[in-house]
Length: 72
Image (cartoon, rainbow, N blue to C red):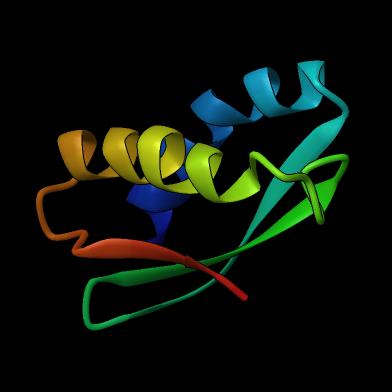
């Protein structure tokens, strides 16, 4: 599952990098994907919305086993 998640994150990454940010996969536990937001995404007021409405939505669509995404 980690490889699948990483591939999806690699597709999302250019959009984050365009705004000066990035994302790193930390772990996956029982369908919960744990990521770290980097660069401009770190501490950004819109980071939570990006995480839930962007990253989580895309991951759930691509990988039904994903339950949610959490920032660590």
